[in-house]
Length: 150
Image 1 (cartoon, rainbow, N blue to C red):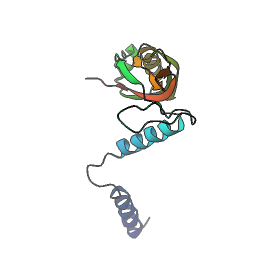
Image 2: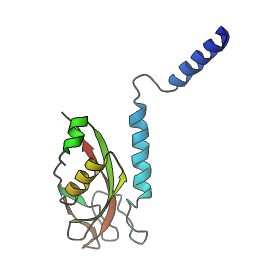
Image 3: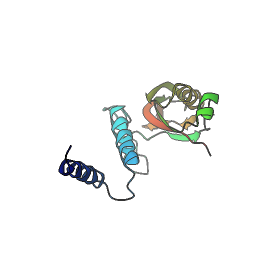
């Protein structure tokens, strides 16, 4: 490869890296895009026949979003702790009308043992259920479970 070609290649690499402003965390940007995309694709919104309330004060003609009241953090598996794994697991789930969690599925995996810990823990979470016309209803959504070593 001639010197001119090497310079062109180096310049192209530089140009690619300069697409993002300094200090911009590309990984965070794409993670945020992924979460937003999955939340829209997973049915994070109530069924079409029940309109969602964009207002803070609930109204009778739309569904409210369930509110988490008990959310313990998951434990690290021994394997993940030894390997010093960190990251997020995204789960889809349904909050039932009694505030319990059902139908938990991994949407974005981190590592098998951490996925299992996330599912096990989220099944114990409690919510104030979604309300529609004054009655509790089931509500499908997605949650992110964070695994961080401190």
